Amino acid sequence: QITLKESGPTLVKPTQTLTLTCTFSGFSLSTSGVGVGWIRQPPGKALEWLALIYWDDDKRYSPSLKSRLTITKDTSKNQVVLTMTNMDPVDTATYYCAHPIVATDAFDIWGQGTMVTVSS
Amino acid sequence: EIVMTQSPATLSVSPGERATLSCRASQSVSSNLAWYQQKPGQAPRLLIYGASTRATGIPARFSGSGSGTEFTLTISSLQSEDFAVYYCQHRGTFGPGTKVDIK
Image (tube, rainbow over all chains, first blue to last red; front, side):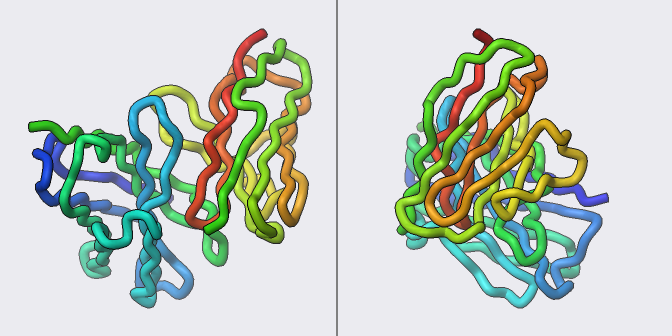
């Protein structure tokens, strides 16, 4: 059974760097084709794709946020970390990590999400 | 960058009726298209991937069709639990969503 869970701060100040951790079980990021992605959703708004990392350390980023995002993996800990620099109140959102079906871009298993508020 | 649009923004349907949701891509995405359902306070749930393949455990009343730039999600007979927001996705882009509410 695949599960994912997000963790990190619930409140960050403007200009700070956000670090979120996705801890997963039921699969390995050392297995060919496997990946983990991050998606966010501001309150009352649509989903926004952020980043995705694959088993071979291939990384994909949202073009509009690429300069602010870094995604890394720790295979031994079954974790994926997303950092976002220069946080702004518009970055207030629920942040999800999710598992894509191998060889597709569709996320079949999602974490519960973690709400991050950006405020001074 | 490919832009995904969805119509209508809101669809009012009576229980038992058929619902048809549309998703359009600004350029061809072949069959690389997924549909999700999201209820308030919950994470999205994958319904369809590859434009027409139902995800594990998804009822047969949900079906997807289309290729290229035009896609459709059909719910053949709406159940009470189907009232939610539906998103389409191609790779790194989600559509704005269609809210299905009770007529």
